Image (tube, rainbow, N blue to C red; front, side):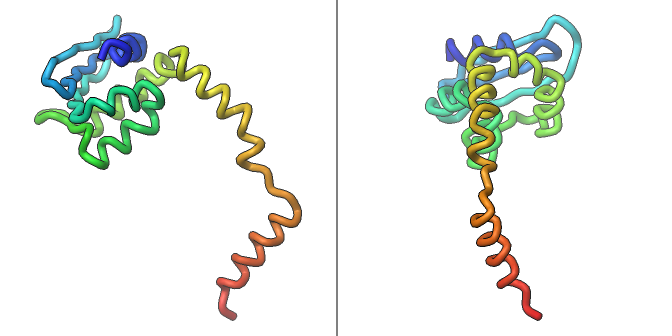
Length: 131
């Protein structure tokens, strides 16, 4: 939890995030100014590493599969409000800066669409239309 705690410390600039890790230890991360409060429970030790690598992808996945839960009294709206208020803190974290830079650099590759590929894609869509 030490590395993830470092990320949460940098992430929470406003408000408060309470985290219960997979072995039941409680951690509180507070920003310097008031803001929303949220709490999460991490129910899988592997989730800590996944959140460290890509929290924006793995937190929603973990919520859906039940490895990240919200304790009584807290809602998903609370967590999202905390996230949106502190997104700049996450974007400034070194691993996140590197990841976002690599996404930007490789964006052209993911969006490349040659003329022949565009024709093939259009043809497959047209075949779905029944006239």
